[in-house]
Amino acid sequence: MRNVWATGTTSPASATNPALTDAELERIIPLSASNPPQAGLPTLLIHGSGDTLVPVSESETVYRALQAAGAGSTARLIMPPDEEHAFELEQPLAGSKHSSLFEEVGAWLKMALSS
Image (cartoon, rainbow, N blue to C red):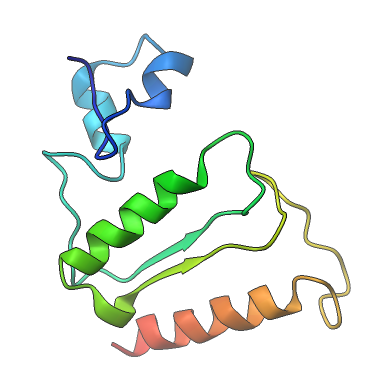
């Protein structure tokens, strides 16, 4: 079986780029049997809740695996509501609909850089 993610589905990378070898895919897939989560490594996942390209469940699976590995507060999953796979950050930042996202990212960076 070629490159199965923790969710049991074939990696979308193999579907979009079948020229990648198994070793290359294992290196870029964030979570697999040969690449388990590292609890001590601060990890920030940002995934738009309205993503139609990559299922939100992929980030949720990685987050749950990090928690199960003992990541505690060093792992964070932020899901901006109704955002797609890529979303525009408007200027000026103050008062934008993403201002709370920036505050969350800033708080996580402060935590991650101080640990």
